[in-house]
Length: 282
Length: 346
Image 1: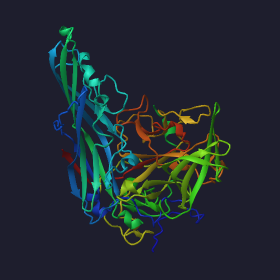
Image 2: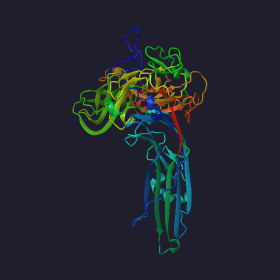
Image 3: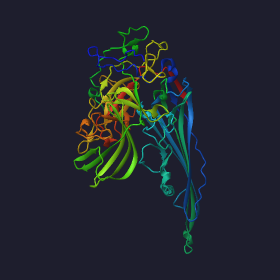
């Protein structure tokens, strides 16, 4: 092994190493000849605004019960950009994000009520929309952004200040994250409140907005999008033969849909790839 | 949260003596030109891979027992390397934690708890002590963060315990395509496929390493001041060298924060130095890759929501009870901006 003497030493005391480099230690960075592919900044302007998804099965209220709910969640990992890194193997490296991440949580609730008998005090017929938008500055904080996500080959900005997005019907949140609250008339809250999960539905489940993956040929940037479709049926009745004027039956349908998006995001994603694999170091 | 430039930037700048190699861009004199006119300088503190440690390598499994006593005056910890008499264990769980010391990796794998014959409560910590031999606590990465392979620790040339601030003042420059090969190439200790230090490889520079030695004192509380306020910035650094507000000055910089302790298992006993702790020798302080937040801070006023703060702070977020005593923040900068910049609308 050759040594070109890049390690620096005190001239008066040759045993004392002053310098900060060692000629036998590899640099953790790209090679100039490949640099245009392995040191690259992608500026992402995100404009995607998803429509709601529909797919929840109709809830069936069991005999003797008064309510039932069903829900369906979707997660899509959408490939938004890719380029060839030029190596014929999977290189070591990482991505750093910096800029303004915008998280939007939108939701809509449609409530219908069918009444027989007395006027209900439980619900009503309405459609309400909620939207929360939060702009989150992403500092180039290397360590957290190098954390791998649930995909073993991914390098992603996990553990960001947000991490979860949800909507609710309550006025204040005890959680962090972004809420797309819907203001529901007090007279209609009772039904929704019967199922706590409605009030704090997570759409992101702690995952991250963008993920960078490096395979044997490509650098790929993905966007994580989440949807929810929640359906609640509630039934209530009163019957007393002696007081028929008070008898009633009514059933309430609540359909809540939510979606996350990052429209408005303006963020730099810079990728650094070393010209070797981790396998070469072990 | 604000910072004070006088304490934020240490006056102890590393000496700019250069005992090695300088390679200038075409048209510049390597002896006289500015730092950003160099392609390579052997005195630049670049990020190099010093060792790759297999965390699952076959080394002796070790155990240590911890008894914590809580009182009005605070927490007292007793450590033993032999099992207390009459131990009965009732719970056990995976508890992973990795600390780096001067010469060892302390890899905590499992915790159990139980009581001894005198009804004292003890935790039994299972760990491996793996030699790295660098003589300083290095900045490190987990292999799963930078590759698709897990279970390795990549330790670098950067010493987390020494507070330095390099005097680079030039802005990042564009890559010049002609600078491909100056013919300086070292072979590496890792074999043929991995080059050693080479003038044709690009590296980020270490701009500063910040420790508590030169940062503002954190806000401590508790009977023995053993806790740090979760909202208090522990370490500050700013690229500003004078008292002017340059909005946007942080952009070329990246930051990495590490928690430091006087115990390899993530404890800090106030008033106890790491080399006084029984059984752990003088390998500390011990640095951990725990969750922490790097925040932008303006020169004055509250914590900034803007990425264009005047400085950065390493903030203890929800980890105040760890009582980190030797935290370290590494500031990294790139001497060049990306040669390829692509804007996409998606």
